[in-house]
Image 1 (cartoon, rainbow, N blue to C red):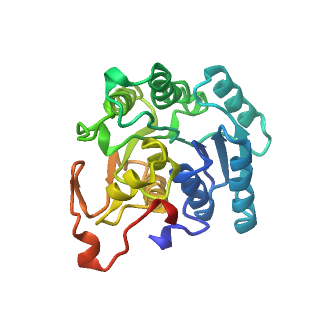
Image 2: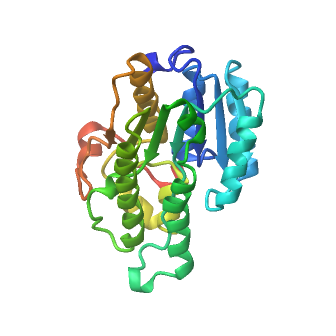
Length: 286
C-alpha cells in the first residue's frame, strides 16, 4: 500500500474532507497529500487542531496546497459558506472529491429511553444532517464528474450488540440509504458515490468519546485483539480514489475495512493478540 502514497497517485485532485482535525479525517488528509493531491481542504470545528494538521502536512509535503477552514458541520449555512470560500480561493480550481467523514457517537451505555435529548440531537445533526448539507456537490454537478465518499460504518449494516447504540446505528444506516439513493439519482453523470465502512479503529477520539472516556470500558473492549488504526482506513481511501482515477469506468461502490480479528460486528477473536504476539491496546497508549 505504501506504493500508493506516491506524489503522482492523486495528482491534480482537489479533495475536501470533513472531520479533518483528528482520527480518520486527519489520517486521510495526510495520506491524500502524500499521494500528491493538488490541494486538500480541511473542515472541522477545532481551529487549533486544524492548524496543527495543516502545519504537519505543509512541513512534510510541499506539493499539496492546504486550506483549513473551521466549520461546524451541524451548521448548514456555515457549511455552504465554507464551500463557497473554498471555491473562491484562486488556488482551488474545483472540488473533485468530497469525503464526508465527520461523525460521532455519544451517550453510551445509556439505552434510548435514557438518552439525553442533546445527545440525540448531536448525533443526528452531525452524522446525518451534516452529511446531507455537505453533499450537494454543486462544483461536481456543473462538471458532472467527481467522487463523494461517505464514511459510514460496519455498524450501519448490523445491529450493534452494545447498549446505547440505537441512535448511532440509526444515523449510520440512514447514511447508507442516502449513499445508495444519491448514487442512483446521479445517473447521467460521472460522479461516483461510494461508502467506506470501518470496523473497530483504535487510537482515535471517536471510540474514547463513545464510552465517555471511561478507561476501564475502553481497555476491556480492546482487550485480546488488534484493532485498525486511522492510517489503515486512510490508505484504503487513497486506493479507492486511485482506482477511479486510473479507470473512469471503475467505481468501488462500498468497502468494508475491519480488523482481521473482527469476523462480524459482534464476533471478535479475542485470542488474536496472544496467538500473534500483539500487545493489547489501552487508552493510555492512544
